[in-house]
Length: 180
Image (cartoon, rainbow, N blue to C red; front, side, top):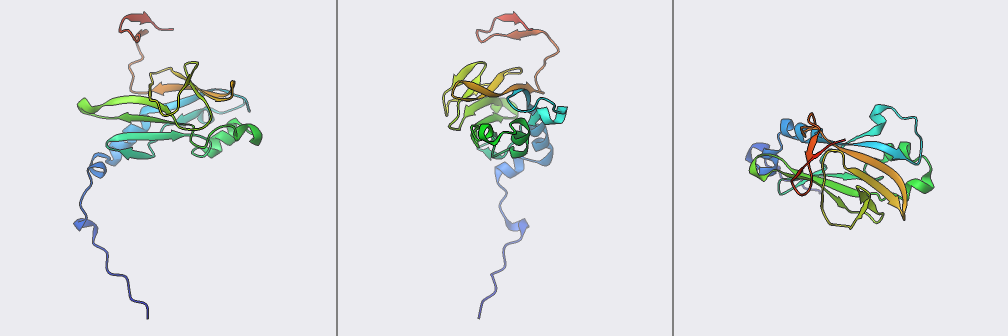
């Protein structure tokens, strides 16, 4: 006859992983609320509610303390169906078009970074990003999903942790420039 499964260890005896400890529900909620994408252009419908225009960047995994959110038609299928109702156009967007990653807390904090991961081109502020090369994101960065040279969808990156009350931002050279 079939033998019963051996009893599994209780949760109290399992070793705690550092990731589980560092990802308390409060910290993960903070991480989830830190960044979102706002749809600014879509080749599909234009009559969208505010909720349908926003894509919160929720981490799907954590690698060595780095939180990673994936974006693509396979990740947010309902939103992509709304944004690109034509199936022929929607299938031009990769299932995993790009990832946004960041580290939270202390001296280790870094990011956010965008890494193109799909077969379809992704643009960052109008320039096509090479696949697997991280690009630093800042509040207001424009992210585009393309098919060839045709822009299918454009997002604006929002960093809710950024101090955007001031109209002065630092350029890449570190000199002060006035914002729009």
